[in-house]
Length: 95
Image 1: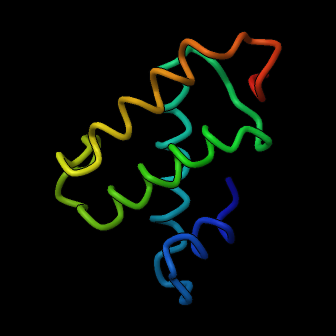
Image 2 (image 1 turned 135 degrees about the vertical axis):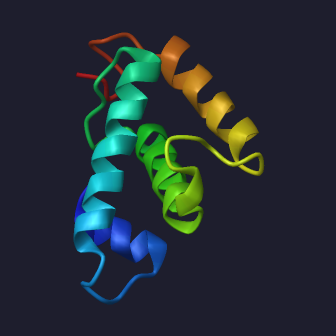
């Protein structure tokens, strides 16, 4: 995910928090890899959506960094299950 598309997703127009948002992007991508064992490229929309959901949750609930809020946990678990079990390393946007 790029900083620009993530800021658009978050509806952030200023540059004051670019380093924070970049850190959250990196953390979401590592979270995805740690949870699935796969590295997804930018063509996998489900992986991208999961990272956007995580970044949004962490950005809006900074006191809970590293955890998902109860509100989004079922969606995160469902997407992670699909990404973990529906894609082989060579297909589905996984590298």
